[in-house]
Image 1 (cartoon, helix red, strand yellow):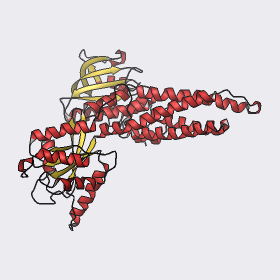
Image 2 (image 1 turned 180 degrees about the vertical axis):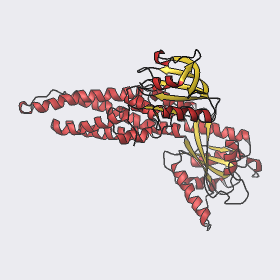
Image 3 (image 1 turned 90 degrees about the vertical axis):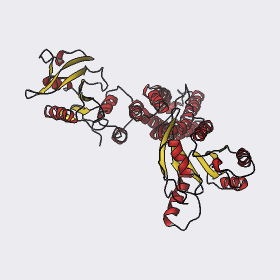
Image 4 (image 1 turned 60 degrees about the vertical axis):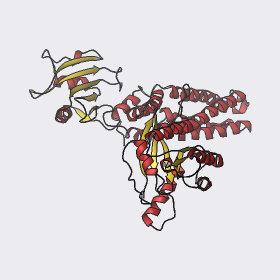
Length: 467
C-alpha cells in the first residue's frame, strides 16, 4: 500500500549508493527545514537555515551530540517552490556509505522517517506539482538508456500529452453537463446540447485516441527496445553474429550442432535506438529433450520479435533457403531480413551476391551476404536493420509509451463509440450519459484527475527510493 501520510517529514538518499565522491540526502515535509537546522552549523558557527531564503545554499558542518559527522552543503527550498511542493532540504555530503547511513540515522532520531519508493514524486503529484503522466515520466527519465528514450520521457514530462487529454476531457464534460441538464427538463422535451456538434467532437476525440493507441507500438519499442530474434538452422553462425554485433563473447561458439539450447539476449544502442538481440537455439528436429525445449522457446521468441534475422549458409541451395523462410511462423507485421552467412567460405561457382539477389527475389525480403566474423559486415547489417525498421520520433505528435495509458485510451474509445451510436439512434440522454461517464473516467485515470490507491501503488512503487 502506498503511503499518503503527508504530515510526516521524510528522508532518503537521492543519489546512487557507493558510486560517487558526493552523495545527496533529501528531506521533504513541514519540518524538513527545522530538523536540518537543528543538526547543521554554518561556517560562522550559527544555525541559519530557519531564516534562509528559498533556493539558497549554505556551507557548514552536520553535527550530532557535539560530534562533527561531515562537512556538508545544504540546499533550502521553501514550499511551494520545490520539487514536492513542500519545504525541502538537500544535504550534500561525502560519498562514504558510513557517512550517508550515519546522517540518515541521526535524521530519523530527530523526527524524520525513511521515505518509501517514489514517495517524493508521489507528494509532488498530490501537491499538484505534476500530473500522473508527468510523474510516470520521471521514472522513465531515470531509466532512460539512450537519446530516444530520454526524448520521449522529456516530451511527456513537459505535459503536452496531458494537456491534449485534459482538453478533450473538458470538452466532453461541457457537453455532458448540457445533456444532464436536459434530464431536469425531460417533460418539456428540450435539447441544450447540439447533437451534431457533439458527434463532431466525438469523431475528433476518437481520431486522437486512435492515433495515440497506434503510437504505442513505436513508443513501446523505443522504451523497451526493439526485439530482434536471430534464428536459423544449427551452425549457420547465429552465436558468432551475436558476439560480433555486441563486440563481446556473449554466446558460446562451437562447430557442434545444438550448442545453443536456450535463448541468449542482450541490448545494443544504435543511433539512439535500443535493439534487443536474441540468439536462439538452432531450428531442427531433435530427440534431445533439452534441445527440443530450447527450440520451442526459439519459436516463441520468433513469434514476439519485431524483426527476425533469418540466418542461412550462403553455400546452401538458394531455393531451399527461400523455402525455409516461407515456412517461418511470422505475422504480417513482422519484418524479416535474410542473412546469408559464411561468404568467407563461399565455394559455389556463382558470386555470393548472386545468391543474395536470388533469395531476395524469391522471398520478396531484404537479403544480405556477410561473414559474421567480419566487423565491417556486422556494421553493414546494422545499417540494413536501421533502414528496415525505420524508427523515427515524430517531431510534433505525442507518442504513448505506457501500457496503462493504452488500456485507458482503449476503454475511452470503446465507450465513446457507444455514445456516438446512441446519439445516431437518438437514444435518451440518460442512457448516453452512462457511456460518457465511462469515457471520462478512463481519460481521467491517465492524468490522475480520477485515481485510487491501487493505481498510485502500481505506479509509485516502481520508483527508486529517494525519488
